[in-house]
Length: 148
Image (cartoon, rainbow, N blue to C red; front, side, top):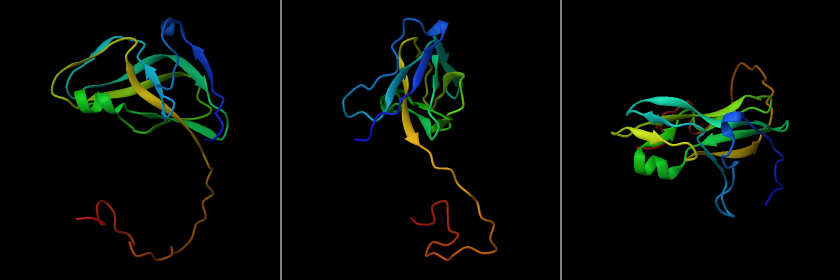
């Protein structure tokens, strides 16, 4: 296992009393995070849900926001812009964009696990402008071109 990524966390006033992000099991890849507010998502609705904390991510890393599989399967609740990226220079409150793809309203309850955070290393790219690209078997085929 690779070494832990040191991430500083600042609890915001409306996050007082909530658990800090934590791994649910020893083998969990993501830190579970909870809602810092109560709200109801109507079918088809989306909202940026408050978590009550901000973080400082070291240079060379990002933190990805990912949905929780149980909410997706049982209620049709997932995260938009998945995986969402929290950049290392962002210092505002972490909010999770939830959407209700189900058929019934869903109550988000303060303290309920709504998403997970996964730290990941980032490599910067340098772009080289060229006139042509090398050929591959796939070529320019996309959007389902490799399957039936």
